[in-house]
Amino acid sequence: MPRQRETDGAAVLLLVPVADDLRERLAAEWPLVESHAPGTERDALLGREGARIGAIVGYTQVDALLLAACPNARLVATFAAGYENVDLDAARRLGVAVVHAPGVSAGEVADTTVMLLLAALKRLPALDRLVRSGAWPRLGQPPPVSGLSGLPVGVAGTGPVGRAILSRLTAFGIEPHCHARHAPAGLDARYHASLLSLAGACDALIIALPGGPETRNAVDAEVLGALGPAGIVVNVGRGSVVDEEALCTALETGALGFAALDVFATEPHVPARLRALENVILTPHYAGASLQARAAKGAHLIETLRAHFAGRRPSDRVC
Image 1: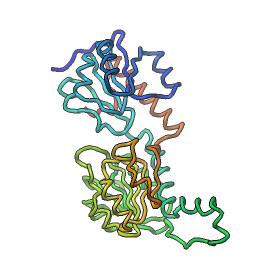
Image 2: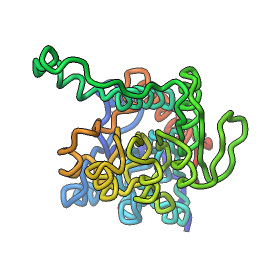
Image 3: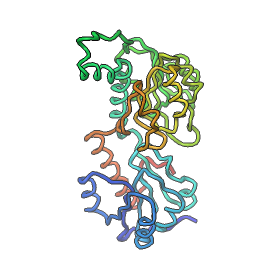
Image 4: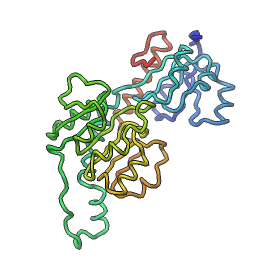
């Protein structure tokens, strides 16, 4: 049964830490309840405070139990593009709006993606180690590697991030390819109906797909094999999209050349097999991080909360 709106004195539940300046701005407008990790302490906190929570903010697990513990909450705001951690069925059943922030940091993610792709192509970590070790005078210049100009590059996912990536890669004179559930309009890129076809046509595969059951382990051993021993995978989408066991095996055996990963299946925990490899770049889910992107996300969140508590329909609703 849908919930009735209760906004007088309603609090905002923060499930994740936010920057101090954003926290101050939020606290100036609404009472805050903070719980950054699930467990008995959160259960006890929500037992005391749950009834006065009118909105939930975060990108971690928001399931039916959490929604039940906040019976007056009518909004879940992720302030990120992804919302796969929110139980949408429970939210719809309870009349809880779910809002995400698509495209807010798309440009920043795209910039980082190009950086990761270039670092992978040029084998930047190995070059850094060569110079730092003092071995450069003895070993001389390493063999040349592929450049980006003219390279067939595939982008899986044509949402705001995927489109921003393709627009930046165009400046390098690449041969653009893409994959999505449906052929996108307005993109100057060769469309592939499957990931396997995309990988087979490209030397580098960039993953900008959302998480969730539909994309889980979509990049499997077969897709990785289609890229070949010189192939490169860059993942800035969701870690769950890549079969990490298959990826480790491909990198270890030489079936795949290199990977640059900003996201992982069970982050912040990264498999020891990945951490042991030298033909991989690992970054801590940081592609969209910048002062500018943080400010944009904060502004989007505050506008979403203001609209919600004023009885207006927030933009970027999922349900």
